[in-house]
Length: 204
Ligand code: GAR
Image (cartoon, rainbow, N blue to C red; front, top):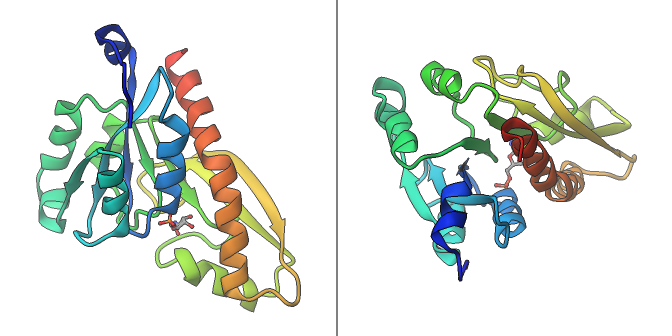
């Protein structure tokens, strides 16, 4: 938890909201990365599941949480208004599986990143998430896979690619072992790519 932050620091802070639906291992790495940062902070965790483990991560670090439902998210501007009222500068999707509404994408144009557990444009699109991706990679006999970090646009997994990293897939690999390799890559790279992108977006 942060201590000793003066008012000047708070005003200069760029504020991140992380959207996540699952266990939140990426969210945890991102929070840890920015914990002592003097220009960027994780200010909000948004989830569409009220039992998602990522909400426990938010509690551990005393970070505000917002649980959303489908009606609010798609039929009103409540979530976007909430983000605005909390002065969110940048949105990070980390295992968030709902399509983001257009008004939110437009508002956060080039200020919203997603991570996908494959080398897009391969293995992207509707239904391609988590273990589904790793099973498809294994079934296709791929010899390599990886991660893609991209800006979010109105189509699933089609926004401009910011960063990719690869790993090998061996004959002995299973979807589970592929998932582990992918998580290692994600944890190593996502926080630093986020920092780099926010720095170049805001010139800080
Ligand atoms: C991550 O592997 C991420 O790439 C994937 O969900 C996982 C979330 O893990 N996202 C997608 O598949 C999006 N299409 P985590 O909850 O442990 O961070």
